[in-house]
Length: 72
Image 1: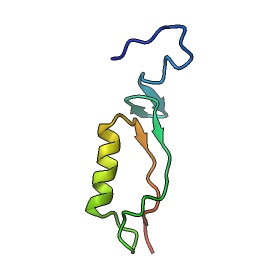
Image 2: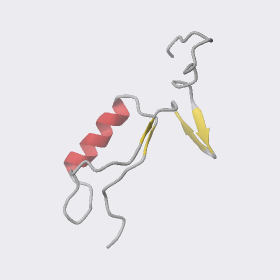
Image 3: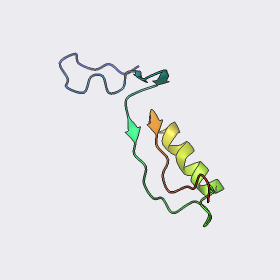
């Protein structure tokens, strides 16, 4: 765990958070955006999966996925 000064305005940013029953490892959220890595039909490609895995390894607590299809 990172040490953060108790007076720092963002001291809770790296602490665990909850959204209903979901616990996230920190309060960093990646918003959905177009990455142009999915297949033309909207299915995630290996490249798009690697992209999101890298964001998770980098420390993002919650990733909201965009630009992929659920169904046609």
